Length: 179
Ligand code: HQG
Image (cartoon, rainbow, N blue to C red; front, side):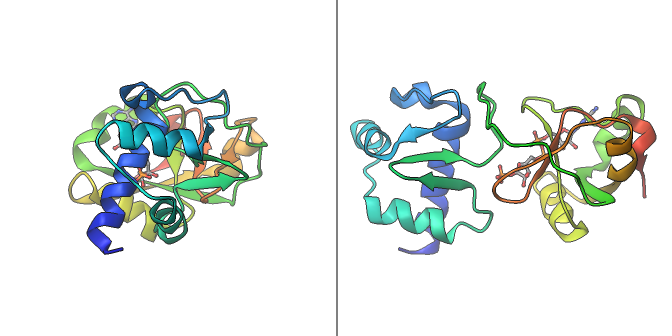
């Protein structure tokens, strides 16, 4: 399977396991899971034939481990805009986490802090390199430092997804370090 096909399949899965399952007639359960056979049938029926071997390859080879297979089911590890409860336990974050963004958002972030926007949670990275990659999706990346230890001490709840993305409901400005 070539790299382009892998990315294409990964984007297709992200779209339908995170954002628009109904577009191909899928219903995710409350945890975001769907039967793999159902997903493959729905994809085929909507003009995107995909083999089980290709699916397994994309899940295993995915640079961010975006998808999780458990038994006969699959789900996206994080990043949903549809309502799901991933059932992740609360976790103690490392002292600092990082958020990659771009300069045009900074005025608003200084006032409001980080908000989840269209997703369920604010996504935070465990290291600067990852945050730079996240910010670079939108332009020249700017990395904000999050005092996660202080947030945790003050009662903010953190979860970590199966692929190592740290999630929290919001980050008030006082916990943010700007470059
Ligand atoms: C910004 C990708 C103005 C925030 C990545 C970001 C990540 C504000 C954008 C995952 C704001 C939201 C998530 C405020 C936040 N005012 N702008 N108060 N608060 N923002 O895509 O973190 O490839 O929803 O800085 O790797 O960029 O999809 O979040 O620029 O893990 O697996 O609003 O998506 O993963 O954008 O990215 P997003 P994100 P995948």
